[in-house]
Amino acid sequence: MYEIKDKEIILASASTSRQAMLQNARIRFRSQPAHVDEESIKHSAISEGISLSDCAVLLAEIKGQRIALENPEAFIIASDQLLDFGGRVFSKPKSLGEAKTQLLELQGKAHKLHTSVVVFLDGERIWHHLSSPIVTLRSLSVSEIDNYFDEIGNSALQTPASYKIENQGCHIIAHFSGAYYDILGLPLLPLLGFMRLHGLSPANKTIIR
Image 1 (cartoon, helix red, strand yellow):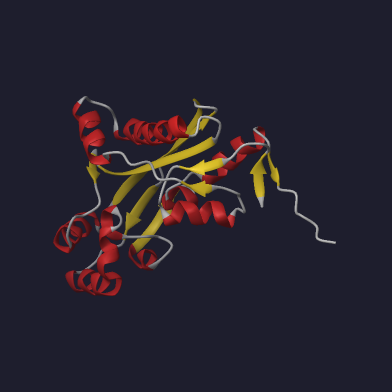
Image 2 (tube, rainbow, N blue to C red):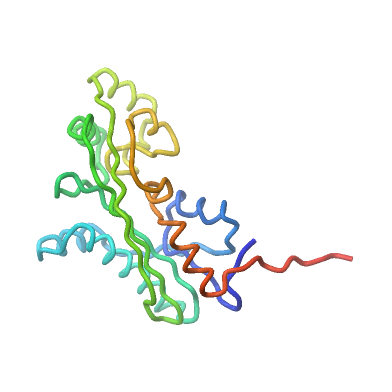
C-alpha cells in the first residue's frame, strides 16, 4: 500500500471506476462522496458561458471543497468528467430510450471526454489537472445497438453514451487518443506524479513476530 505520510487520503467520489484505479495503484484511501447538484451547477455554468472543459474542473473543485470543509486536515482527491460532442454536453441518460438516442447520434463519430482532477490539502485547493481524450465510436447498425443494450441492460444509464471502456463498451469503440485512465474518469498518472511530490510512498508493513 502507498500513503501520504501523516495525511488521510479521501476520494470525493462514489465512482467504482475511480475507486478501482486507486485500489489497483495500492493507494491507501477512503471514499466519501460529495453530494452536490451536479446537473444544476453544470447548466448554470454553461449558461454563463463557461467552457465544458472549465466546467469539468469547476465541478471537481466544488466536490473537493465540500469534502475539504468536513475534513480540513486531509488530502482530498476530487474528479469530474463531461462528454463533449461538438460543444454539446451529454449527461447520463434517464431512460433506455434516451440512451439509444444518444448512441445513435454518437455512433461513427468522435467526442471528447473532459476529465479533471482537483486536489485539496489542509482545506486549500493546491492543484488541478485537465485532460481531454478523444473517443471515436464504431459505426453501428440499429440491430447492433439493440443487441448492445440487451447485453448491458440498465447499466446503460450509468454513463453518458452508455459505454464503459473497461467492460462491454470496448465493443462499440473504434479507437481513442489519450490515456486509458483518463477515459475511465481520473487522470491517474499526473495525479500519482503530484502525490509523489507530496510524500506518496510505500506504507510501512506491520511485521508480526
